[in-house]
Image (cartoon, rainbow, N blue to C red):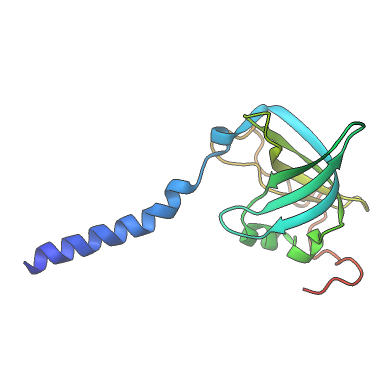
Length: 157
């Protein structure tokens, strides 16, 4: 009887640990590697959550204004690269290069790079199963100027 309880406990623990993994997706499951996109606008909101960060950016066109959701890497990965949450405060102007969702009716994309108005560029993390080839860029390249960013005036972490 003890052995049965032990097996049940181990099985339940394995299910509890695996449950969050089911919700995670590969790049190719949601995003279209053949649909690169460039979005320019202001940050409206930032979701600094696992397993992916989400930057909500207001994009204005000649005919309309839309809020796009841009998926980035995990908060921990972005922090290690030098991108802090306060770098993406509401109102921050950005250029995001990435890949559109497979369902083109959605205003959703996977971000590869984010470029600030002063030219600083950060890799957001388009990698994994189905992502376009090339992987992460060389973080020592001049266009990828890692390190802590400067918060906008009046922003407190």
